Image 1 (cartoon, rainbow, N blue to C red):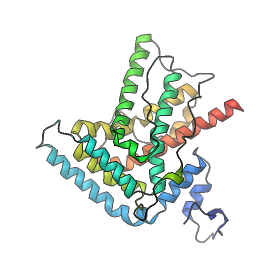
Image 2 (image 1 turned 135 degrees about the horizontal axis):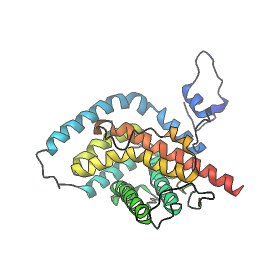
Image 3 (image 1 turned 90 degrees about the vertical axis):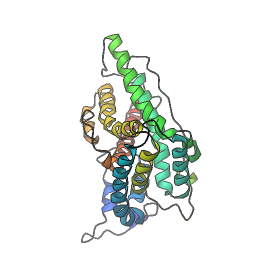
Image 4 (image 1 turned 45 degrees about the vertical axis):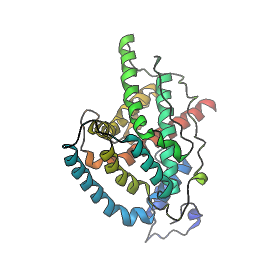
Length: 290
């Protein structure tokens, strides 16, 4: 199904309804229209349908094998620069345009969300924005820095709140000036004959490589950062006084670390949760300026 064509004009057969069309038409969750099109185009690709079922068990087996190998190697041995060069090469040569666009968007959106929380926290908590404009920008340890940013932000924010003897509170007129759509264009993503790998298959393949070329500490921290989706969701919901929308966050409790074997699947949930939170903030900004 071509979600970038006139699929809305395709006839609907009640005896054979198109599941992707149903998900696209459903408006119960906040998400940008262009993002939903890209997400469903990637999800309905042949790569995800036929390749992912084989890639996922292979990747999880490699995670177990690499974990055993790591017990016999120096604990501080890491090749972060090589890792990020491999990731950039894979994105440029193998991954679908929609998937690359969503990956690059994620850094922008994560930076905006953290800045939103910091600005409305009543503290002077610094953030380290990541705004890649092209795939080559991820070569500068961007995936690793993304994880470090999240943990450092939570630590600094709560240190400042404790020092001030306060906590996050609902803000009647929150500052949403930092929330906007990134200037990244889907049309600028690579479209060679080899760019066929869908987002979830790519994540599954990259996860054991991530584990192999980083320290155990870096990999554990990266996989368990996914459970901080609830934490960031609670921060934003408290500021906006909108806790009902936390139903969209489902990466499990941050105090209960999960196995690294499901990191690929949970990373996809992390990306989608970030998109939905950003879309909700965009809606709030539009309402405030109307």
